[in-house]
Amino acid sequence: MEGNGAPPPPSAAIIEHKAYARIGLLGNPSDVYYGRTISLNISNFWASVRLEPSSDLVIVPHPTHDLVKFTSLSHLTNRLENEGYYGGVRLLMATCKIFTKYCKEQGIDLHNNNFSISYETNIPRQTGLSGSSAIVCAAFSCLLDFYNVRDKIGVEIRPQLILNAEKELGIVAGLQDRVAQVYGGLVYMDFDKEKMDKYGHGNYTELDTSLLPPLYLIYAENPSDSGKVHSTVRKRWLDGDKFIISSMEEVANLALEGKTALLEKDYSKLATLMNQNFDLRRRMFGDAALGGLNIEMVEVGRRVGAATKFTGSGGAVVAFCPDGASQIELLEEACKKSGFFIQSVKVVPSLLNEIDIRTLSSKK
Ligand SMILES: Nc1ncnc2c1ncn2[C@@H]1O[C@H](COP(=O)(O)OP(=O)(O)O)[C@@H](O)[C@H]1O
Ligand SMILES: O=C(O)[C@H]1O[C@H](OP(=O)(O)O)[C@H](O)[C@@H](O)[C@@H]1O
Ligand SMILES: [Mg+2]
Image 1 (cartoon, helix red, strand yellow):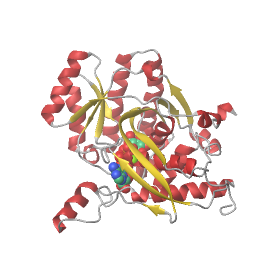
Image 2 (tube, rainbow, N blue to C red):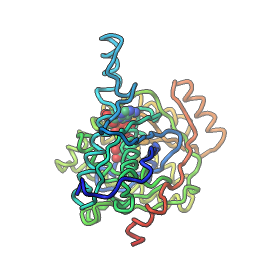
Image 3 (spheres, protein in one colour):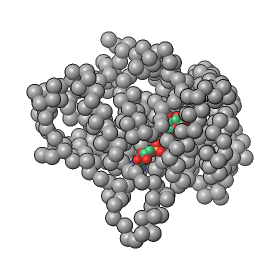
Image 4 (tube, rainbow, N blue to C red):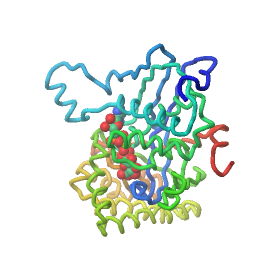
C-alpha cells in the first residue's frame, strides 16, 4: 500500500488544475434525490488549485477566503455574518482524506512524497454556482496527476468521490455539480436509484453544447449556505413526505422532457420547463428558505418575459430570453436597476482527456 507504492512523477513538477462553475439548467435539485438533471459547465468563473512538491504536507490557507487576521472585532463579526465560518481549507483537507481512503480501499498504490496544495477562486462565493465543488474537483484532479493514477480512478466514479469530500464535512449536496465539473460541457444525468446502488454512479450522457440557446447568468453578492437551504427538504424527503417526494419526481421529469426539447431545439418548451422548475422549488422549499433577494432575481427576469430559475440552491439565476435581442436588452436594464450582475453564459467544452475517456465504462 502506501510507502512501497508507485514512484513519484519524474519531473516532480508543479501541477495546476481549474474547475469551472456550473449551471443547473433543468431538474435540480432532484440530483440529491435519485432524479435527473441537465447541467452545464461555464467558463465565466472558475477555481484553480496548485499542487507543489514539498517536504511536509501543507494545506495552504487562502489569504482572503480563509481569513484569520482581522482589523477589529466588528470586522471579524461582519465577516462571519456575511460569509460564515468556513473557507476552502476544510475542502482541501477532506479531498485529501477521501482520495487516500478510496485508493486504500481499491488497492491503488500511492508514492510517499509530500506536497503543498493551495487554491484560488473567482466563483462568487456560495451563490449556487458550485464554488465548493469546484475547489474539491480541481484539488482532486491535482491528486490524480501527482500520484499518477488518472487511469485507475474512472471518470464516472470521480463525481461521487468529490461529493464524498463534502459529505465528510456534513454539507448536503448532490452529484450534478461534480458531474458537470468532471465532464465539462453539457451533460444529461440520470441518477436512477437502482443503477446508483449497482454501479456507484448514475448514467451520464454528454450533449452537444451547440444545442443550447444563448443563456444569461444573473447573480448577487448574497452568500447562502447550500447545506442549510437543503437540510429541511432533505429531512422531509427522508421522512417520506409525500408532497416532497412527488414534487421531486416532477422536477426530475423536467430534465427528461428538457433533453427532448433541446435535441429538437424546441426553445419555447425549454422556457416553460425552466419556469416550472423554479416554481416547484419554491413550493417545496418555501420563500423564507429561498430568500427574498434570490426570489427577486427570478422575478426581475420574469417581468420582462424571460424564463428564469436558480442555477443551484440560490444566489444565482439562469435566464433565457425566448424573444431574443430586444428582450435581452430589457433584461440587462432591469438587472442593472435592481443592482444585480448579469453576464452572458460561456459554455466550457468537454474536459475529458484521452486517459479519462479510456476509463469510461462504455470504453472498456
Ligand atoms: N469561494 C469560496 N472560497 C472558499 N471556500 C468556499 C468558497 N465557496 C464555498 N466554500 C466552502 O464550501 C462550503 C460550502 O459552500 P456552498 O454553500 O456549497 O457554496 P457553493 O454554492 O458556491 O457551492 C462553504 O461552507 C465553504 O467552506
Ligand atoms: O439546489 C440545487 O439546485 C443544488 O444545490 C447544491 O449546489 P450549490 O452550488 O452548492 O448551490 C447541490 O450541491 C446540488 O446538487 C443541487 O442540485
Ligand atoms: Mg456547493
